[in-house]
Length: 153
Length: 153
DNA sequence: CGGTATCCGTTCTGATACTG
DNA sequence: CAGTATCAGAACGGATACCG
Image 1 (cartoon, chains in turn yellow, brown, purple, green):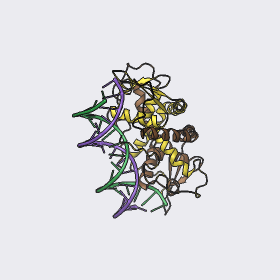
Image 2: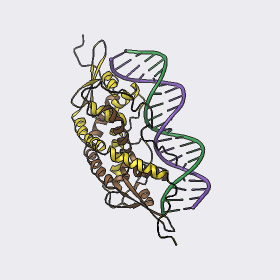
Image 3: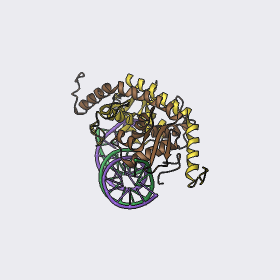
Image 4: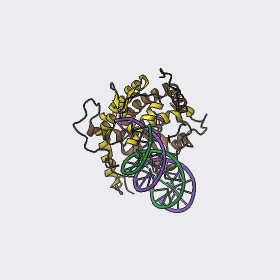
């Protein structure tokens, strides 16, 4: 296998000693890097979709590939491996002549599913607002000189 | 500016016509790509942190940089721009001799903050479980031949 | 069918230098 | 202080070829 087995030393600069200086933070500095790391993984393009698809049902490799559709075989494998490693999905290999492998959410994965659904729900609920904000920003970006209307002189 | 102004045609293969084939999905195929796109942005390493930091307080560019610490000036700028474009943070420029720019969450950003806090909370609550799962997986990975204990014969 | 290993282009990110 | 522009290296992601 090629992907890193280390989950903490993935990239330098993540967990540099930043202690005892901030005051009003929700996240702890030492913990923060870990949270970010996990979050970055579960909020991954494909991970999110796979977890959503695996809700209340078990799917085969090919079935998942068909559902996600846009994903390549490589990325599906990698995503599934990460999810399995994190204990979010369970992999069942059936020793039959045409190999059959089923993937299902673990109890931990189910709890995550509930949580990400909240985030997805928020996103769905605010798609319009974000789109509108983007349009506004885009317009403003096309206005280099807003022509100050303040009291000149 | 260099970053893309288009928010939908970022990458090919995202929104390929995948309609009327799946059955038990929570997310709609056409909507999915948008949700994923937004999600991918707000769940960004830095975006998440910036939003968390901006909760209930306004911060200057340098202050944010100090807090996030590991972030480069470039990434902070880019992250802030994206967040501003999505209508999640508000940018206030004070026309003083030493330039002063304050960043604060918009009402929309505040609602997002609540939601991502749930996700962060989940992650914090399950750090140990994930770490344990990883250790288990890592051990299994170091066992190429599990020595089948089934009925040999 | 399910998966691995490799090659290669695209994207992301950080370091650096420069501006107002 | 608050950015912008450019470059180089790392990581990501897809296509391909091959295996059990």
